[in-house]
Each structure stands twice: as structure tokens, then as C-alpha cells.
Length: 244
Ligand SMILES: NC(=O)c1ccc[n+]([C@@H]2O[C@H](COP(=O)([O-])OP(=O)(O)OC[C@H]3O[C@@H](n4cnc5c(N)ncnc54)[C@H](O)[C@@H]3O)[C@@H](O)[C@H]2O)c1
Image (cartoon, rainbow, N blue to C red; front, side, top):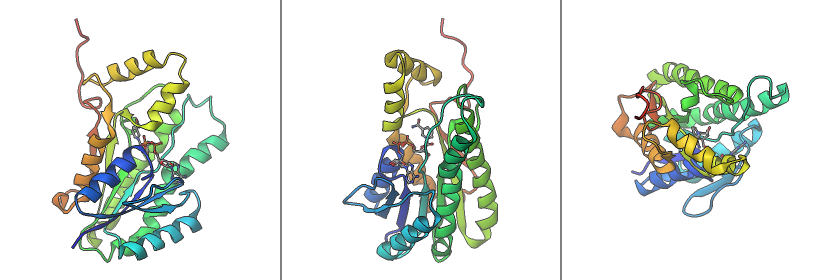
């Protein structure tokens, strides 16, 4: 019997790559996004900042899929600057998507996940949760919250048979990063700096993050809950000497 998955932010980048891989591995996949993709996915338009829309979208996904076994909580937006650079309204907007959005979708999905024999939630967190990156105060605070939320949810739901884990990507080559580079004064220089920040000397691909998501989402990872899997080119764990 094929598992049923919903992927938020499944219209682009890491979410689309994850949805594609889960479908290739035989899952039925619904993508919930403000800009949802079409076939072969069930695309459902939803803004994760609106609780009524989220509840309706998750119920529709469960109905059309025939249940929910896997939730990939991935929709997220970026923010730049130090704590002096963004007003309260921007802090509220980014937390609303990156943290409260995950809470809303998971809350709506839990009744369906409880019915599953292989229930699993994978949150897309970030290297920004575990390393201090310059000019990312707001974004990093949201991802720090996602990491703690992952651990707390894993504890709350382990006895219900629901696993909760997250992936921590380094800078990934997605449309998001392309937009960031487009806005930079020196896009080539900025790309070179992002590449150099990762010990492997290159950005992570969306497919590499998707592979980690697919592993954590699958019954193969049945003994794994409350973990963060880094997919960051070595950025969190390694301390290299400067090249000669
Ligand atoms: N790209 C990176 O370098 C990187 C690194 C670490 C973590 N991440 C995380 O990965 C996730 C996906 O990022 P990406 O790089 O694939 O970005 P992306 O911009 O390519 O895709 C994000 C998707 O989320 C959707 N989305 C945004 N706001 C939404 C909302 N309110 N409701 C519903 N859908 C919404 C967008 O429409 C888009 O399809 C995010 O959570 C991001 O924080 C990205």
C-alpha cells in the first residue's frame, strides 16, 4: 500500500524536489503552496498563515489522498539583517510563516497521522538554527524555534507512533537563493562567498536535501525521532584550516 504525503511549499525548490522524490518512491503526494504545482501532484492552494485555509486544505488533501502518513513541513520565507533592520511587523510576518505555519499544518494533520501505521513529520529547519550567521537575526530566530519545536513535538507524539525530525540544509541552490543573488550588488562575488562558506566549496542541491527528507519520512527511519539531519556540505560539523 502506498503511503500518502503532504508537502508544504511543494511548489518550488526543496519542497518540489522532496515531493518529486517521494512520488518517485511510490508515495501519493499533495503539495500545499500559495503557488501549487500541477500533475503528477495534487496541488492545493493555501497560505499557511491562515488557519481556516490550512484546516480546509489539509482536510481536502486527506480526502483526495485517502489519509495522511507523512507531513513535510517545508514552506518558509527568508529575512535579512540584524535585529535593528526589521520592524515588529516583519518579525511577526516571518514567524507567522516559518513557525506558526508549521504549527497550523501539523495541528490540522495530527488527527490523520494518528490513523497511520507509519506516521512521520519532517520539518525543514536550517543551518541558521545551529550556527550564528551574520545578517540573519530574524530568519535564524525562526529556525531556532523550528528546531526546538521539532524536539518538543517528537516528545509529545512518540507514544502515539508519530515520528518528528528535521533537516538542516546549508545554503541550497534553489529559486530562493537565485532571488537573493539577483538582488546582490555583486551576484558572482556573493555566490563565490556562499560557496566558500561551506567546507565542500559548493552549495547544497535541492535534491540532496530531498533525499534526507525522504529518508526521515520513510518507514526505513522507523527508529529515528527528535533528530536534526544536517545537509550542509559540512558547515556545522567541520572546522577546517584556511587553505594554503
Ligand atoms: N535555500 C536555502 O538555502 C535554504 C537553506 C536552509 C533552509 N531552507 C528552508 O527550506 C525551505 C524551502 O526553501 P526553498 O529554498 O526551497 O525556497 P523556495 O522559495 O524555492 O520555495 C518555498 C516555497 O514555499 C512557498 N510558500 C512561501 N510562503 C508560503 C505561505 N505563506 N503559504 C504557503 N506556501 C508558501 C512558496 O510559494 C514556495 O513554493 C524553507 O523553509 C527555507 O527556510 C532553505
